[in-house]
Amino acid sequence: MLEKTTRMNYLYDFYQSLLTPKQRSYMALYYRDDYSLGEIAENYGVSRQAVYDNLKRTEILLEEYEQKLSLFRKFEERRKLIALIRQSMNEHPDDNDKLNRYLDELEELD
Amino acid sequence: MLEKTTRMNYLYDFYQSLLTPKQRSYMALYYRDDYSLGEIAENYGVSRQAVYDNLKRTEILLEEYEQKLSLFRKFEERRKLIALIRQSMNEHPDDNDKLNRYLDELEELD
Image 1 (cartoon, chains in turn blue, red):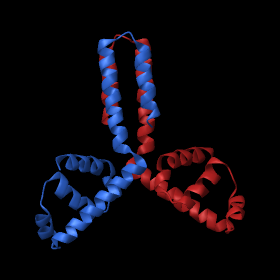
Image 2 (image 1 turned 45 degrees about the horizontal axis):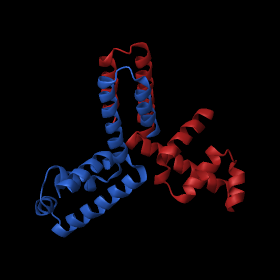
Image 3 (image 1 turned 30 degrees about the vertical axis):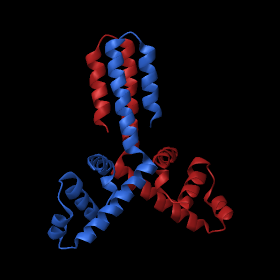
């Protein structure tokens, strides 16, 4: 569950601009601020089921955006490459070929 | 006009997965393959005006996605930073601080 929360928070970060204000509010309260379904329902004067259904639909939508645009996957791959570049700079400061290959890979991600 | 064509081709590259099949076809034929409105209309058995209207709506949609997600802007900024890193590696191979600052900037773009 923690893993899903982390993933949803990342996907929300990347794609929140494509959501409606209500979808954004429910997602932020539930996943980022750890409110319960009941608390969100009470806050908005709707049923617990309505909040649940809205969140489920938003989760599916976020996964669909990730399938189409891969922003989270590319973010993770870029972080890995940048870490490799920093490591290579420290351990093999004279090996420009290696650094250039990592930079090529970074460019190809776009 | 050439500038607009270049921009539309870039935006299309980044956001085509969010378009409908028809929007994709018209955009690719008009901007990538340089077909005329009349040729596309004849090919699809629709009016020239219908093709024009569809393209205009798609252009607006692509600009809206770019406003929300900035994929093209970030792509350009990453390319600039990667070029600066390559330059810095060649001209100041011992200045790791400079390289690290560029890498920090790359990470902050995500």
